[in-house]
Amino acid sequence: MSRRLVSATLAVSLVVSACVPRLAPIAGAPAAPATLPRTVIAPGHHQLVFNWTLDDREMSAKGDGVARIATPDSARLDFFLAGGFGNGAAILIGDSVQAPGSDMIRRLIPPPTLLWAALGRVALPNLPDTVIRVEGDVRRADIGRPVAWRLTFQGDTLRRVDRVSDGKVEEWVERSDATHIQYRNERARRSLQLTITRTEEVPEFDASTWRFVH
Image 1 (spheres, rainbow, N blue to C red):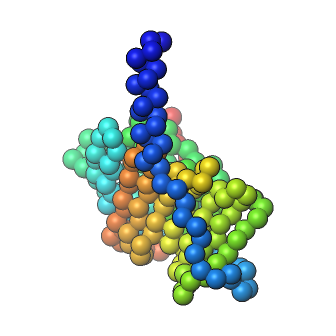
Image 2: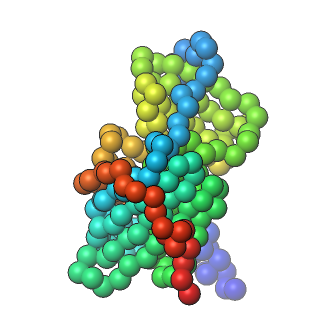
């Protein structure tokens, strides 16, 4: 590799690293009691219809989709590209996600913990050392040593989950209200926005919902 190419690669790496924000110090007073709200999927089976918009350094796209969610830990998301030019799906069961097919669907889908956060459920790996602080009706928790995750609740509602590495926020999901969800990968400079247009309780899903047909 030439010296010029090495220098260019290093410069790009430094620029990307500089774009990743540092995690701000956790705000608020120590929580008493030091507990977090319990977040689970609502009992039964639900279907969410949504619009989506994707933006990253290489492409922009938009379309609509549907999420099918079943207690206690199963979800399927289907994405349809505007104009009928493509589609993709992801199946999330526990801490495992399957998203075969095109590169577009892999761009759309966050990792399992953040995908569950988008649906309002905390599904973190077991980590020691949790610091919880309260500021008004906002409760924040830094989890891990060093911090690997930050959870933010407003009342009993999960609002945001940040994945942290080396003191920097690598990616996050934010639920500003019941219908608006945003996922951001800071290092890839990729954003996905979902707007839920309809939510309904439905009968039990067919078993074929939870598998891909090859």
